[in-house]
Length: 138
Image 1 (cartoon, rainbow, N blue to C red):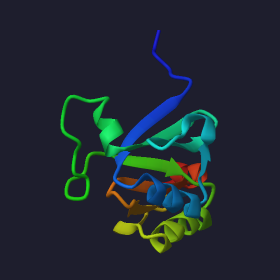
Image 2: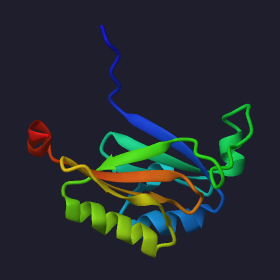
Image 3: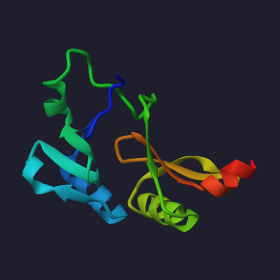
Image 4: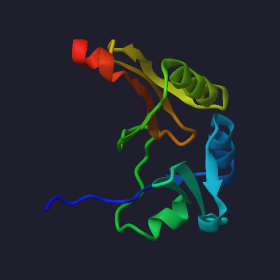
């Protein structure tokens, strides 16, 4: 039987937790206070998906390797879906206005529209709208 998970938890190190919380709040994300404190903030993606934003020193307690410098090297991309092209633009524009950086030009594949940005620590994020009806015609 194939493995399936009911919940997803992504953990990311951050340099300034309060500044990071302000950044994601300004984009429109909420935090679960039950799993947030001075060392961590639980960013809610949906009912079953969360990103734990951990201070670098706290993140280090979970690993035996050094914390990656994502400001100069990519360690992964967190890709999230949007309900429309307009929502993609809205979220990406809010991220840029809050201090994020565009990581690459918007991509329009006809069936999928994607905007990418770096958060304040350099983690890569993508917001994408996928149109299944356009995909079947591609």
